[in-house]
Image (cartoon, rainbow, N blue to C red; front, side, top):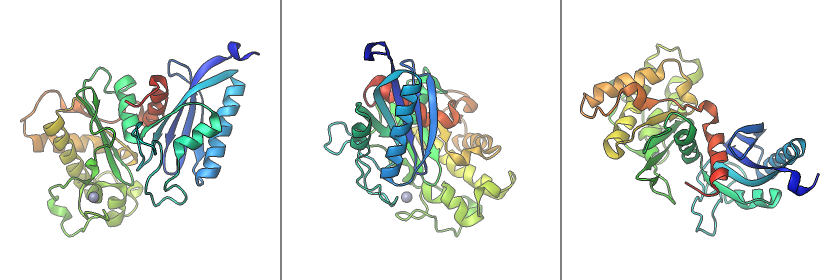
Length: 300
Ligand code: ZN
């Protein structure tokens, strides 16, 4: 089969700290093939990622024209920067100053577009998910750390850097006094109080906590304050709460209840259940973000 007869496809990666989720997709964004590649340091990970894409292209008689990556951070997302696509200072072994974009480009020979994982997930939710048709939205990921992307006024807020919303300060829950917080920079900032690590530090494995544990009441109080800050400042139409912690049964409802109490009817643009929500694309938000970056051929 000649090169002309092969169909053109796109590649997407949700580059997480422990897994790279990779997919080959049609030009319409529909996934044709996918694979989870465990992270094993840059060398082995990139070899495995490239092997997946080459194999999938061969199986589907397709040629990948562009690759989009929604990446863990910190990462340089400024296309005008000399180090665009480079992982910056990170404790992950081998990844600090890894030129992720350059190495994927060298391995696969296609243009590579890169964004933060939260910005990628946010853009995908605005294209295909719960924020479809919205002019503004925020995506907050609650995992080991807490990160947020905000889209308003036709662009990602803060680009080519990104908000550090995970480190805002909060009011303490009365039954959570005494915990110093787990952020190495600020102690009891949002991330220091509400990340998976913060939960682990004072209550043990969050996955083992019963749904009626006080920990969830406290967690909901902090996440509700985060939602309140986003709505009061950026007046976003959606606050999408993603990340592993939001899989806890009933947590999103607790956040909505706490938010209503704190907002006290002051801003009521839309119903809270519509405003504060989990990702419509579920666990695939970041991966679809990668594919969307490839579709658009640029950041944002
Ligand atoms: Zn902090």
